[in-house]
Image (tube, rainbow, N blue to C red; front, side):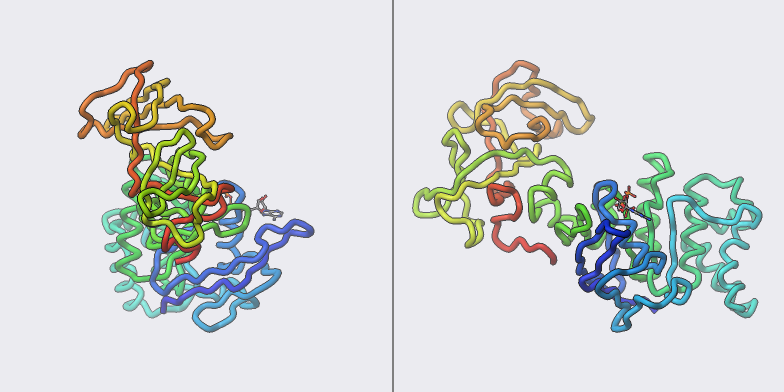
Length: 374
Ligand SMILES: Nc1ncnc2c1ncn2[C@@H]1O[C@H](COP(=O)(O)OP(=O)(O)OP(=O)(O)O)[C@@H](O)[C@H]1O
């Protein structure tokens, strides 16, 4: 039976090195939960602690109400899928999937029924008598998935399972994984550094940096209401501007450095008039406007991406938060009235309803209702 997972003030150290200082997170029963973050941030380490392959130096991990810190990996009833398929090359697809059930001495009839069902769920029935060497990468990963879930684990743990596949197959397989997970209804913890994959597949995402969870929320919230500037820039692109909260017409507004004002009625109590802030604008949230209605900038680069064109912009330097990649504006070709050229001067206006405002140091959102862990 599937379980809820609780990490309660969990600590991971290797000798003097602290990898996870103190991490608390709940994962709901049946949820598809993704750990996302840059290389080395501790995603795999946390997953391996849940699996029982890594020791825990402080705090507790619980499955429902049971503390599992000292329960060995093989007694945690976990299914795992890794980047390498880890299937037996000398066994057929069917024998690979049967393997875990044979170890449990399951009666033949029951085993046949279970394997038939799982092969069907992951759509590899027609390959059941083949050896793995005659399967594509995606098919091999389906075998690994079938083998992991046929034992009815309490938790399914997946560590970058798609990173060996080519781009098109990755997209196909992530839908397949999501479908299977929904059908089986098993609590799943998924590790990836691919933000698009995380957005596409998850119920909730935890964005990690240096062993610390920066925000836990639905993919939509993570993208539209990031908790801090790290999340805003790690998930998709965000352009960062210096700004200040001011009063305009009796309510709060944010002002770009050159005096351009955006009315804002969605700032939290914490944002006070006069405060310096950081403003984040997604490339797709600018629109072209008339002179004096937006910020004047020059098109420096242009990249055609099919549905979108992405331009690199030159803005007045004093408006920008330092040390950020190029300022971008992307135009949806389905809606663009006019395509711009390198050297053009345009006036751009951010969509006030879609921008995000942070403390000046970027550490916390000043938007109403944005929480660290939802
Ligand atoms: N056995 C170990 N001894 C010492 N340090 C380790 C050990 N295993 C991992 N680390 C360190 O712990 C940190 C987190 O590693 P981890 O593999 O969890 O990162 P990750 O977020 O999964 O990264 P990636 O996406 O590159 O796999 C890294 O700095 C790594 O060097």
